Length: 312
Image (cartoon, rainbow, N blue to C red; front, side, top):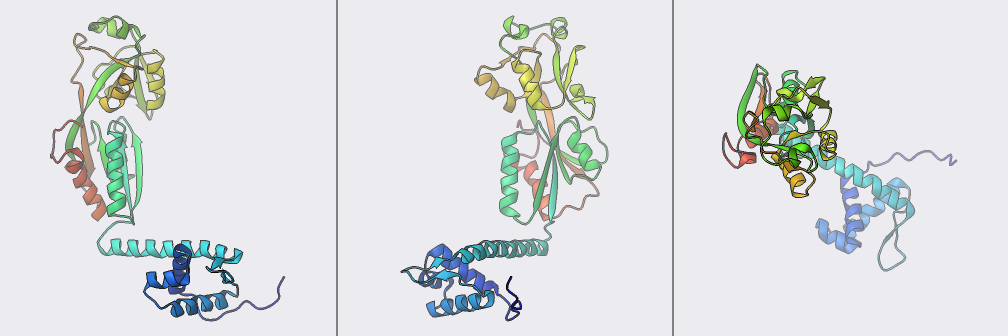
């Protein structure tokens, strides 16, 4: 191992690293100079100083264009990370000056359409790049309970049933009764009566050991199977093991593909086929700029610019 003392001289600068990356990205010293608005001689001098400070050669200059050495490639990897961290620090500091919180925690009911959740997250990323977004999903009052307990800042939830929340109705999800095409409820045709419906397994979601029957399922069959996630329930439905009510944004692709078929429930005394969706936060919540924007966005823009009552 080299016993020479480690050099301690002039500190590296962000300017040097920026010029290094400009050369790598634009292919030459002259192109880099034009990009950073400096003379070519100035760029060359800064790279020479950087090489002296690092005690390695960054570029092989024997050819027509500079080529990174093996050591230079490793330096570039570190420089890229350093500059990315600096950019992130600038973004965060700018956000802090505007009252943007460092993180935002959303708890979202699985009934909320996934494409709208993606659109919301994309807007947050574009408008508040410094915010670390956390999205938790669940069902049966999961989202509301997360906000009430302080584990989330904003809930986008189905029927809340939780006191002490500042909540606004933002729309309603249409629930579609479905079964596999070979299931008796689908195969018989017509509308099943309540007694006939009760003789078949009703597939419900659960959360925390509680049945999903109280999630406005619209019908509480005595034959209930409780399942822990939507993917498993969908697999059971496709296999013909029971029937269920799915949000229309989940049911429609399955129906279109022929894997499930809708059931006419008009004779089964089923409750209203729409489940309200609310946005909620605690009255004591101290939402930053990003949280306030999300709250307003979900109330209005995400549901077509209406304040309440639309179908999602």
